[in-house]
Image 1 (cartoon, rainbow, N blue to C red):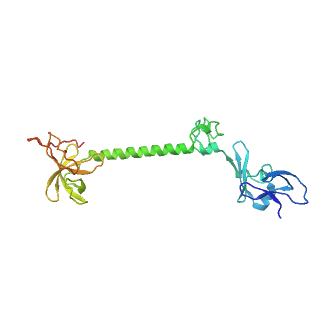
Image 2: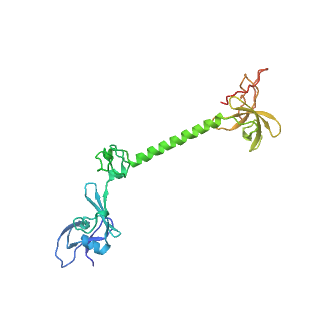
Image 3: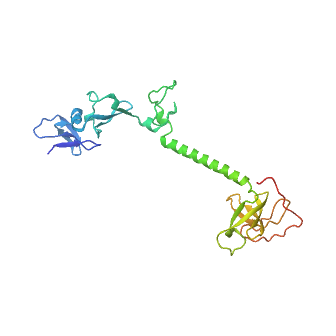
Length: 263
């Protein structure tokens, strides 16, 4: 038996042993309570067994956090190599949760970026950094700003489309379920624009040769057939609505007027 009684909390490798016949060098707490140990894994032994030190992680105040020998990572302080001369400074990594996860409210450094002093030179992490916006809050704010920008651009595009009348000769499609004829099957009828009027209204000719008036819905952008009889100097009748026959008694002698304003 190896006599291992204690294992590293990260990699699970043995780090302390109790072997019969060997002198006791101390005691360690295990799942079975305080146990006498005869040897512990040292940095030099870990170097020989697992390979050279590839990473040494310390906290922002210099406290030990972990060390990696070869590809095996340890969190036990038994193998803390500081002061042994077994590694180069290039493998040291400072783990700063505040710097990694928060925006600095003092110098506005983004998460994971080093703080800067008043001269814009790199400096130690400001004490108030953990009071800044977290990475999650920044991502949420950026997502909200991006959504608002996209919605604003879509609204502007929609307004431009609605404010632009179709040209003479343009072909418009009207779904048959929106027509006054309730017996019509699903599909679309095509109409050729002849003339445009105010309030998103056009006069058009169907494929059958019938002349009708069409109005555009300002919310959906779809077209539907309207009565077209004048109720004033500029408004055609919309009394019937989509799919409903008109029953309004119209005033005689009024005519539609072509307006320069499409809206």
